[in-house]
Length: 84
Image 1 (spheres, rainbow, N blue to C red):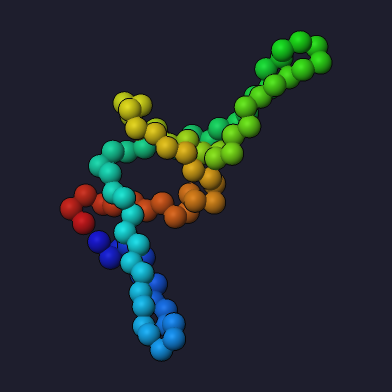
Image 2 (spheres, one colour):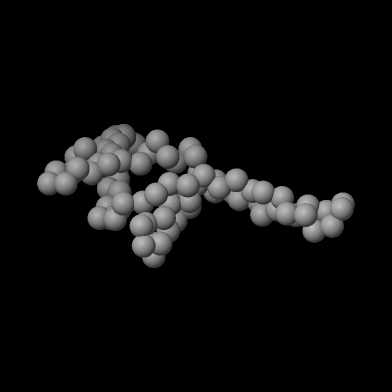
């Protein structure tokens, strides 16, 4: 579990503190998709599109669970090997 968690130690007013961040672990495998807004012609002068703030969409195989994230958050993803 220590490979998945992050530990941060700090001092504040002569006190030692720590923060242990344990990620949510899910048994499902998620497919990572990059969302690209495509303009749709409404008429000759207007092309609306959906502005995606979080540009990455993660879906499980059954498309039952999903969540979005930014590209900056992708390097924070960790892989848990079975049995570890």
